[in-house]
Length: 165
Image (cartoon, rainbow, N blue to C red; front, top):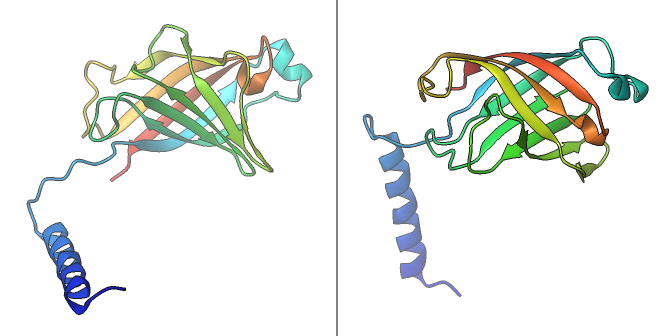
């Protein structure tokens, strides 16, 4: 059972937090993320044998490590109309090297991709050295290997993203 003093202290603490958040000029770290649009293309034969072809268009979110409160992991996600797929890279940023990632999807169910999904970003503008938490736009061009758990399926992507504010 809460006492009147406990409830009063909790209410005052809540008001203090609201007031502190409203103060102008208070610096707060936050997640740094770019959102945009991507084309998937150049599907290899194993992809095509499993129904992937053409140039599907998807929403995309990109959260590189080391910016704001992003921590040590980098994340990249693609969103279609009825499902989404996400990739998690621990302790690094995406670059030209094939990086083994944790991959998963959600649609009518949730599943973690088995095998060894890998990603590489062949072109990033600006590059990792010049990427800042205030960079307004980012372009990513790269590939996903063992896409959607399909052994030997490699797909290319081209994404244009805007900083989420």
